[in-house]
Length: 529
Image (cartoon, rainbow, N blue to C red; front, side):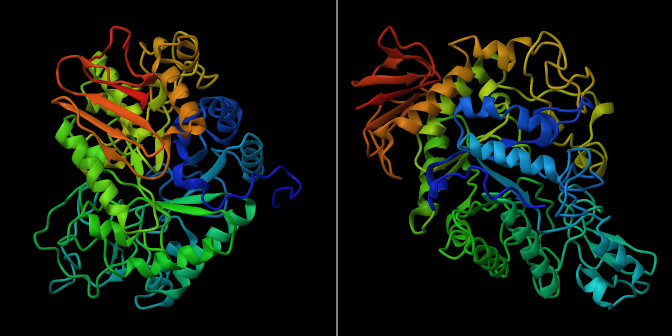
């Protein structure tokens, strides 16, 4: 059943995403509505007023589709339904309606590169003979060697080990990620048609757009040649020209088909997860008939230095300069070390994270926050026995994976599960020392990082000082960065190691106390110049 067409709708705005602040909800870890220790759609729905008060424009909800959960939802068994652990379609429709009534748009994950091994297509492929139409939906190949016992090529899996698994009849299938995530064959028209059907299913329900997982995948080179050199570049590496698994030219034909479907609807958009650092290669995904946005991960990988951060900003703006797209800024997500921890952890990491928030939100374009960014959450050192990320097992326990940045959100109270669930036991354990980090504790503290985010988002939404999608670099003291937006906003970030004089202008917001006329170390300030 589709949503009620008389439900309140957001005003039409074809460009709403150009300067929107998106909030990523990692569904397992945001809020638990039924007490089983796992976040769900009901939990998200119950916390929508908090998100509206925080001031975000849109949500990105990670996969909630039926899945065996080999990769916590990124192994999709049915892309057009809801995993019972998370709720059902009625609950999703209610969430969508409530979000729109609060002025929040909703985008959902699209996972086109691969399916789950439990998908009916892959089960049919396993039951079918080599060379059958069922196998043509995936990438089955004969092995190498006299008896075909060697993989068809030397590609590694991003999660560790080879990217091939052999089936009982002797053929092998490709999985760039886990064996439970077989790659789909986008040279097969049936695969592309099915993706379009999935998109229309959710667009017809009223979703406002998609985040496209592994948007630089989906196309494979003819003949699947060996990689030379054969480097397992890892989940978050820059997949360069020698890595045949990603960023093949044929992927752009898929993106043009995705865009064509989006253009059939009003006000819809897609953002791509594109791990390509070459400016020109990334820009190709942002041509007028492809993605509206692509994550630029340069701030994620930048050192906390003036040169590192400035280079990240300059290259990100250069990427979009010749495209119709704005820049798209990210500090953390469910795949990377949280930036509080990247920046040094403890008081130093939090101080820098506060400054980074003002830097990110002052930049032209759109911004993505990860749930818990606004609370200053750090990575959590978890015991070996609770780790669940497939990277841990596939790497032979040499890489700990991404669980440390996925610990559930603390909402209230003095001990786990801090209001995340009615149960004290959560799918990943929560630390005993997070009482001061809860939403409740920080809402009551005007000096908290949550209060800083709320003020920054309110200013960003209301102030004309932000102006157009441009910036001008300004002279600044050694070890500092300063720029002006066309509307007059000046942002200064002090990484010099000593306080610097506060520039002229009315202070709009600062990440640390500037009452003495200086900007402290590792602090940022917004001024109306």
